[in-house]
Amino acid sequence: MPRPDFIATRIALSVTVALSSAVAPVRAQAPTAPAAQVACAFGAFVNETDPAGLNVRAGPGAAYRVLGTLPPIKVSADDPPLRARVEVQVTAGADGWFRIAGARDNEALLDAAARPMFKGTGWVSGRKLTVKSQAAVGRQRPDAKSPAVLISKHGMGFDGDAFVDHGRLVACAGKWAQVEYAIDSELRANVRIEPAATAGAEAGRVRAWVDRLCAVQETSCDGD
Image (cartoon, rainbow, N blue to C red; front, side, top):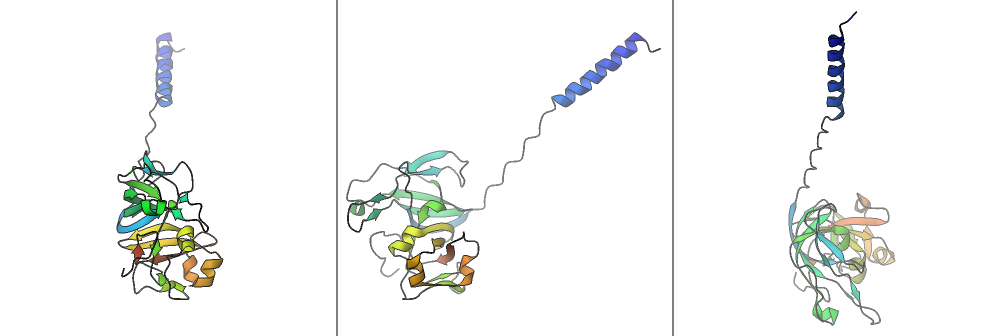
């Protein structure tokens, strides 16, 4: 028959092992690697309709803290109405997010004093940015020799109201922007769509790379 002191030692050892297993620290998961950033340089416009405005974040993703906000589109009472959008400079892109700086209102188009807004450097979702392009074609890659996937039927650029209203920024590379457009009646009437334009795009939308980006909302950028 085992001695009482031997039994007590075995019990104490079992309890210690069980408690050690129960309180063993959980290994922290490694942080997600930051998305690779691509340098860009062009003007874009904020296509936000939420009255609360567009959040500008400290990094390329919704998990980063909010640094400030940019006002939404202001629609005039004119017929047809004018849309005044905050203008920004895009300086980098990463995984559908874009680093912006120099946000400002176009007071001439706004027909009012500039609104208060965040004017520093931060990141916003490309789903809330749009651009004007005076290129006659949209390409498969950011290269003037790349195949054309969106071709203007009338030699006009992608700078009409319908393109600005229904476009959103997907990626960027230098002075090129990859834009995703909703396929509406105006786009079908003015642009020939190649099958490759649907690659990677959401249903009912097409994508293309465009250059000759114009940072002026109310008119064209002659000579760019």
